[in-house]
Length: 433
Ligand code: NDP
Image 1 (cartoon, rainbow, N blue to C red):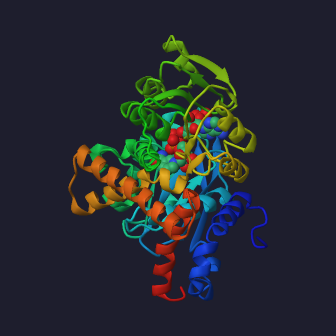
Image 2: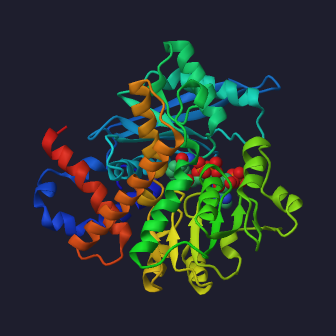
Image 3: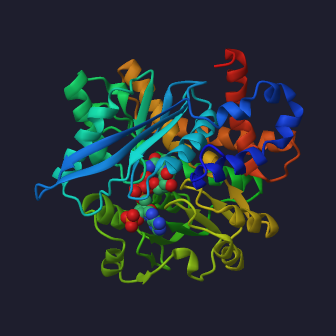
């Protein structure tokens, strides 16, 4: 903390993480002797750069670009790029730190990294997004590569942005499929990558429910967000027999007691780049409301926060429990504050932590890397089947860690321990580096 007194998100993330590791550190004093904790709180490399670009009116604009290469102990750095005005070094470090253990949990050979910029894609023309992306990649290309660091999408970075970033990399270095994931299908992307985080979230939730002798059929679900993760979470939840009654953006939410139609959300968000408000203008049974979806009372069973960090605080967590929700599975990264997590424990609300529940996106990104190396494309079913297995394994490994360390249903601590152990063992084997 003395090194980075202003990095609140990062400090909060490491504090919350290491608190849950006490049992594993007690059982393995060699990790303490090797100062694994001290080493893991310092990213291996931080890159920060200027991103100048010209807007449609001819003004020269300047944003700040970041790439944090957190740990390559078990594989090349891997993690998304976020474009949002709130982006700063603290947020990127927190995300890179968490990514390291999430990637470890997938069981695939990928290290942890994260990047992005405080550029706001909202309201920008395609040409402005392209000029920004070209400037951003002109600098970033010096630091990435198929065996070094492989970025992907995150908030504000979908197919359009990945396409522009890839194009600029190719112009500078020639075609190399493995430098980014989340690519379009016409130039090296994987089937099912777009759906992977949302689908994976539901596969994880299904495994969590089955371990309690329950399932998704007939359950009512609140989803927040209307982006990459939320859209496909709504699709898969519906396909598995549940009913999703909400979707949201940073202005407000829609409530549809008949169940949200993911295709309408997809059309509004991915094709028209509109606001969720428009859903209520197209679907008769839906209503639009300003404010947070978590401040709205309705009886429901499962919460799937898929928007952003800290969207559920202590008060909203208590409200969620009062509304009857018994399970929260995190599509977004760190959507629940530490106070919210405490409330869930007291109220016996089961928490599926982000690191485990939303790992499907990065898992399929790793499968995209495999396909690029093989120069082959797998079918949608093949990728989706592997995703199902990976998400089930993530839950099973967490459940095994919970059992080994007597953690009951504290799947947050269990996922942290399972993800940490593999990284720590790799670091022990590789010496002090
Ligand atoms: P998108 O940008 O596609 O969607 C984010 C959605 O959340 C938008 O609807 C956005 O609304 C809404 N949102 C953003 N900030 C807020 C806020 N402060 N309050 C309410 N709503 C908000 O991002 P993704 O779907 O890709 O990512 C969502 C979350 O999932 C992030 O935490 C991300 O890190 C995480 N994640 C994403 C993965 C992926 O594969 N994409 C993988 C693993 C995790 P608006 O349009 O108004 O901004």
